[in-house]
Structure formats: C-alpha cells, structure tokens
Length: 308
Image 1 (cartoon, rainbow, N blue to C red):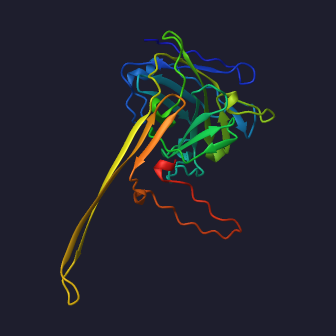
Image 2: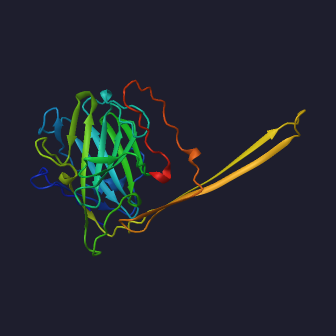
Image 3: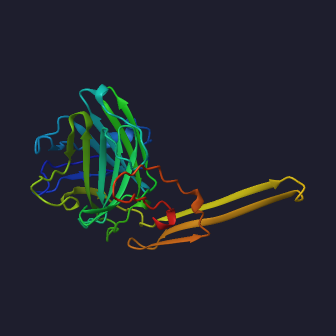
C-alpha cells in the first residue's frame, strides 16, 4: 500500500496540477465524517484559485480534498473550511436543480481525451447534480442520473462531503500494463454563496479558452477493474378491480399483473447495450408543474430510463 500523495502548485496552462489516489483495502464509511483511519494515508490537495470575484487570487477559504480507491470505487474526502460556518447556505431541492447555496464539484475526464467528462456536483445539504459533458464542456446532457453516494455534514469549521463514485458508472481505458498507472483528468470546484465566490483547483484564466482540456491529473490508479457496466432493473405490478352486483350486471372481480425488465450492459469501454422487455413507463417520475408566460414552448427532459 502506498502512503504518500504529492501535489504540484502550477496552474493549468503552465504544467497541470497533479493529485495521487491511494489504494486501500478497507473503504471509508460514507457518513460525512472524515474520521476513518484510511483518510490519514491520503495527503490532501488544496490551494484553490478564485475565478470570481477576484480572478487569479487565492481562495478566501481553505479547501482540502483527499482521494482513495479500491476495486469498486473512487472515494473523495472533502473538507471545505469556513471562517463563518453559521453563514453557510445549505438548501434542499430536487436532484439536478442548482439552487443558490454553498456547493462544490468533482469533474472527471476518465478517458483522458481532454474533451469528455463527468460532473458530480453537490451542495452543503447533499443535493446531487450529475451531468455528462463533451466537446470540451461546450455541450452537456443533464438527463444522466447514475448511482453514486454522497453524505455531507455541517461542522463548526465549515462543511464536509464524503463521495463514493463507483468505477462501473465511468468509462475509461485500462492501462496496457499491470504496472502502469491510469492517468485521468480531474478538477475540483467550489462556490461560496454569501461571497458569490467561485474557485477552481486547476485554474484557467477567463482570457483563455477550454475547460476539460485544462484539467489537472489524477494519478496512482493501478489494476483497475475492467470497465463493464451491468444493471438490471426489473419490475412487477398488480391490480385488482371489484365491481359489485347491480341491476345491470353481475358481480365482477378481476386480478391483473404485469412484469418487465430494463437491462444495461457494457460490452466494452466504448459500447453499451441497452435493452428492455415490456417497459413500464407509468413508474417514471412526473414532470413538475410549470407556469410559462413566455413565447417559447416549455421543454420537458426525457425521464424514461430506457431512453436516457
């Protein structure tokens, strides 16, 4: 087991920043408390840079990120210090709804192609926002809702987030040799609501273009599992109707049942098979009510799992 993490202080555009993930045998408990012994083997990376309001200056509040991994997932231990913790804005809302609040984000370019990436954003109340990005983050798909874990906790020093991102929801190219590292692109972001302050770990000036192509490097990933996704989502429903006897009809009692399954299987790191048998779209989350007084039609995103 390795015990050291090294980081660099250079900004993107000069030499990308680097953070090392440490392999562990026992994963941390995802409970929003960084008291697991395994977190001690990962040295934190910090030194975020402001993008707003004072571009290029050090962040006004300290942030520390630790990275671990095992055969199942990546783990991020995030400590967001705050000199006035009673002013942290933590609001509950629906998933993928980015309300005004203190929040942070983990961005991963697991293909390391500098064009595609995964966004895992969360606020101080634990609300999730997950998005697929491509074309160097100029385009994105926010209908993506994978299964990943996050627990947050407000403390007298700021707020904490523990994040577990399973390898099965990521696409990546395994290292060609067992002794070789998988190098991924990575970036960390933070937003402090009361200060309207946005920060980045791998900083890019506003005068320069690019986003995913400006990520830092996540190194130390070795002997990763083959990226094969396998998800099965079965369903079964039943319904019973009863019509009492009347002048016009006899008593009638009917029992109806239905079943089906959705399947997602990763054939390789580049191809995924999606199949469905008798999909039950009636179980899909209903669209929220929208009052539209504009001249533009209301757009409702696709929520049927098979088509996402």
